[in-house]
Length: 443
Image 1: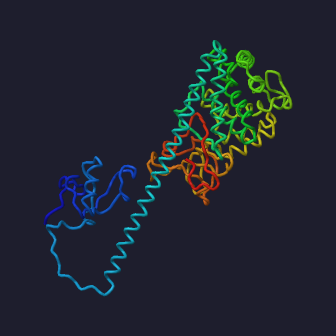
Image 2: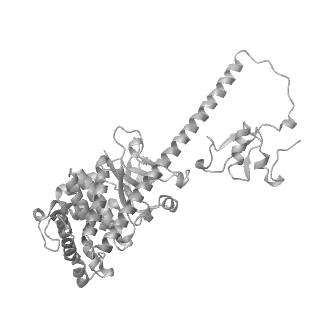
Image 3: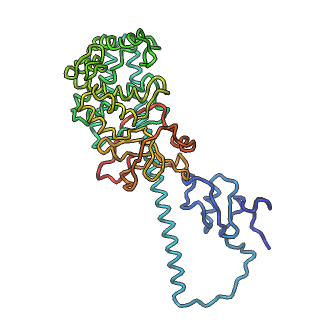
C-alpha cells in the first residue's frame, strides 16, 4: 500500500512542507496571528492553500492520515450508488453551512486582529507622549537655573499640549503604561501631572485653571534639584536631620519659581503641596481653608503616587491599597471634595490593581474610564491564548463579569504572574475612552 510522504518512518505524523497535497488534514502549531487561515487544523482543498502553507517559513507540519483523503494512486473508484431524492440538496446545504461557519470564524479572527492592533497602537501613542513629556521635563531641569524663562516656557508649552488633548476628548481614561515607560527622575512628576489634570477636569476646571494646575504639578518638586542626590526621594528611613533637609525642597522650589516668574497659582502649588487640611503639613502648617484649591489637588495626588511608587519598591502598596489607606487613615489631611472626586474618578480598582474576577480568572486593571470607573478594562490571564495575542477586555462589554476582589501580586500563581507582569512601579498617561454610544473597545 502506498504511504503518504513523510519525513521518515519514525515520524509518521509529520509531513515535509514540499510533500503537501490536496486532501491532507494538517495541524498548524502556530499562533493565530502567524497564519491567515480561519482554523489551526483543516483539510487542504486547493493549490493556493499549499502555496500559502509553504510561505509560512516552516519545514514540516503535523497531519492526520486518518482524517485525510486517501492517496489518489491507491483509490479504487466504486460504482456510483443511486441517491435518494433530495440527498444531493441535503449534502449541498451541509457543505454551505460548513463554509458559512468557517467564514464566520475567519471574520471573528480578523476582528480580533484589528482590535489587538488598535490596542497596541493606542498604548504606543500613550508611551510616546509620556516619553516626550519626560524629555521636556529633563530639559527644564537642565536649564532652570541658567535659563529660567526658557524652562518655564517649555514647561507651560508641554502642559498646554496635554490640556488641549485632554479637552478634545469627550471621555478620557487613565492608562497604565508598560514597566519600561518610566524612569525615576521624571516618573513621579509626570504621574502627579497626569492624574492632577484628570482630577481637575473631573472637578470642572476650565482650560486656564487646568494649565496652571498642570504646570504647577510639573514643577512642584523642582526644588529637589538643589538637594543632595541621596535626599531627593522621601524615605521612611530618614533621620530627623535628613527629613529636615528633604523638606527644604519646598523653599528651594519657591526660589526657583520666583526666578521663572511663575503665576501665583503655580507658585502656590510649589509652596503648599505638602500642606494638609488638618494643619499638620509643612512648611507652614496651613489649615485647609488657607491652602490654594489647586494645591489641594496636587497634595492628594502626590500622596497617592508616593504610596504606590516609594523610593524602595519593597514598601510599595497596590493602587487599591493606596486608595483604601488614604480614605481610611488619611482623609482628614485632604479637602473632602477633592478626595470624593478622586475616589469617584479612580474607581475602587485603579489602574495597576491585580484583581480576581467573579468567574475566578485573574487580571490586571490597565485602564479606567474616569466617567464610568466601576467597569475598568482588564488584561486577563488566559493560558489558552499567547500573552502577546491577548486582548484587553472592557468589563462594560462583559455584563456577567465583575471584579470580586483585589489581590497582591505576590499572591498570584507563577504562571499568572509571568503572564500579567504586575508593575513594580506604576506609570500613567491618559487616552481617549470609549463613549457611552461607542461600540469600540477602549484600546
